[in-house]
Image (cartoon, rainbow, N blue to C red; front, side, top):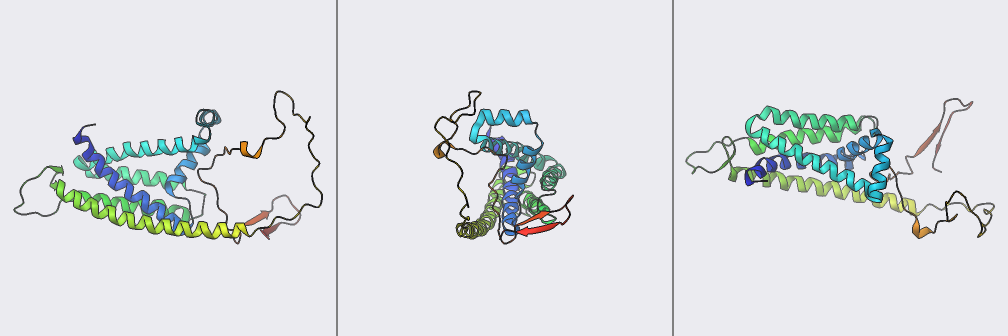
Length: 260
């Protein structure tokens, strides 16, 4: 990739990184799924089972990492397209940003109520503002001509504006990380207080000769040999104070149980 290619990529990265970080931070405040997580979960839910099995057999416990890397690569390509469009056809760049935001909102549909749409919506608005800010040529008089990233926007102006956007984005991201860390700490402390009841009768001891058959062995897997393969990008963290189990449908007496 040439130096000229990095220029539009830089514009796109500033735009999308800002929207992604802000959207993620908003999700932490609301306790909702962030846009990247929503898109990844939607992909997992809708790809054919054969593709899921191939990913698990190929990547093992790193299957989620492979998906996230794929999303990042796609975002890099889209960022490059936004940068190129911003230099030639600004409305097209805005359209790409809006389209990506729509994908994020549609992916969040049906997850956390109306609040699920807010992170992607806010991230899209912020990305559009960042796109306008870093590519809108300032009024300059008497300045020596410099290389331009977009018509009328010189490299020095872009670097100053991109640095300002980056600093603001980092601040918002740090605040969001602090909110997330505090919530995780509270949930972990609540989970640590849970004491499971002692069973009234213990399960029978499994004999050394126990077997499932069909070449499956051993019958008991040692604890240190367990690993988790699931379809969740992140481990769900449940607030036990808000958790409810609703039993309804074809039952005589519908009821709702809390954790206690």
